[in-house]
Amino acid sequence: MTQLADPDAPEQRSTTEKPVLPWVTAEWLTSRHTQSFPEPDSLDLLPEKPLKRGISRVLVPAAILVGLGASYVAATLFFPLTNLAPNVTKTPVTVTAAAPALPSWPIEGAAGVGVQGMGSISSTFEQESMASITKVITAMVILEALPLNPGEQGPEYYFTQADSNLYWDYLRNNESALDVPVDGTLTEYQLLQGILMGSAGNYTDFLAEQIWSSDEEYAAAAMEWLNRNGITGITVVEPTGINPANSAVPGSLSRLAEVALQHPVFAEIVATPVAEIPGNVEPVTNTNNLLADPGVIGVKTGSLEGFNLLTAKDVVIDGTTVRLTASVINQFDPETRDAETRRLLADLEVALAPINAVPAGTPVGNVATVWGVQAELRTATDSTLLLWNGAGGTTESTLELGEDWNKGGNAGSLTVTGPLNERITDVELASELHGPSAWWRLTHPLELWGLV
Image (cartoon, rainbow, N blue to C red):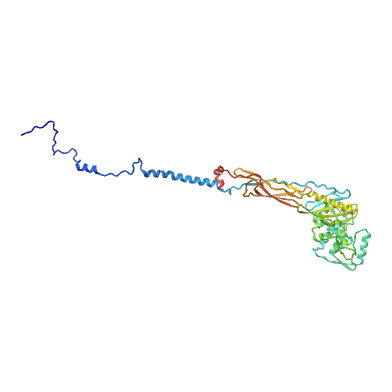
């Protein structure tokens, strides 16, 4: 029986109908839905490794820069200042000079005083008769012609009765003289003792005649010796001083004494108070009475128109030995001569009181740094000198900063030199010498490192 189809029933397709997509099969669908895919490494929006590389590219250079900066700061803030030595300059230093000397001269006659190393002054520039002070010059030219060393007696000279008779002739002519040993001998040294201690004119002429044939020849030798030794203002015509033409500016005798006393034999004789000389009954006493005074070392008396004396005295002032000289000419008597000499020497010693030549705190230099700090350098103590009659001194500074840059820190020394003595004083900073600021260090590396 034939059944009719239900119109509401779904349409039945033939199992043999061809699929629309023939390649889409059940196997294909199964395989596509069951295929495994790799899981993502991260759920972040960007991959992790590229992020780390980016951070490294930023942080590493930054760290390097920070390290370099720290090194720079350390290198500038703590770098020593060895390449930035402060500039030290010297300041001229004035030495206070002594006031002009104004001695109180003797009322009568003439006089002169001197300080060895600082010259001499006179009451007059006129030449006055030296009398037997001439024998100082004669003794010196004799010692040059017939040299003697300390302890030596020199050649011996034989004397006869005629020489003794001549001694009496000198006395009758009112000349100083000493007797001689008849048929005996005297040495050069003994004759010089008689000349310089006893002022024996006969001894003087005797020795001079052994060397020079005439007074003119002697005078030429004496004047040449004076000129060679820088002694001016003296005229010599004969060896004993009996001729008034033997004359000198009083101050010139100071220089004569200084030169003569440099000879040890001469200095020994004029400092001898008493000596035994053959031919004389009594010991020969030095005519210079001032030898009994402390410090007096000679030199020679003389008398012709008046009474003369040339004297040298050593005194110690402020730890320094100073040689003073005084000459008095044409005094009324030996007592006045001696008294005036003592007074002049005492006044001269007072005038030589130490002078504060460079006071403490005197500027001697300046120090300046490249970072703009400056300080003055000053003397730490007074520098006293022995100065007289306008004499001054010189200075020489050695300036160098030490490690102490505080106020009062040592910065060298100053040497102050006068004619007689020398003083050395420290030099110090008058104010603190500050180092460079941190900002200056940071902004001036090339200067710190010595590259400019």
